[in-house]
Image (spheres, each protein chain N blue to C red):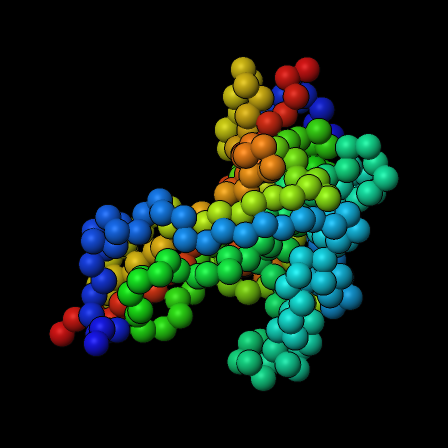
Length: 153
Length: 138
């Protein structure tokens, strides 16, 4: 049985899990929802707020709202606590438009630690990448989760 | 001053701050559109029952505010990265300011880096981060 309080072997986790896609699904964006998203955020340009605009597209940070179906890869060790959201980064590459089928694939992009007198924090960065039907990259969104390990006595 | 080309961008300049709409109605509109509808974002009492100080403004909505602030400053800016750390929660119906400072300008490529913060009425940072945007060369 796994000891959830044991320190994580970060190097082993990196070798085993980095850059392996563990979650994939398809989604299609709806025009009015995109416009509502943009308007609620305070965007005013017609290309974000008016579905009739010829250049209508999702607001740049939309990809941060796409949620993984799986939080961690199969076989990933359990640890005490759920972890806390440590931040999000979104990197749009090409506009996302309504009615276009988008494939979202997630892999673990990085695992790293920060240590101090109070113990060690382990950060997991999951990267979700988005492609269109021609496998053109539309952008990516990183989600960082941090867990704080208890000092070992 | 609205920025149209990279020649209009000055290193160190503060972007005009905006005060976003964090009303319950607007957050509800956002979470429904995002597929994130949950009482923790739309119901103060339900959020408090979960141990939260009140209904939360989703972190991804703060990212959207930051992007909108950039577009208010430079309507033609193409946002290439918004990287944020959610240091403390933003609460629905409270007032916040969305701020930015230009920290790097590449006049050859049009790339501009901006330090971003979301501050509350006490001036405390609730969200901070950086953005990279492309501004037309002219």
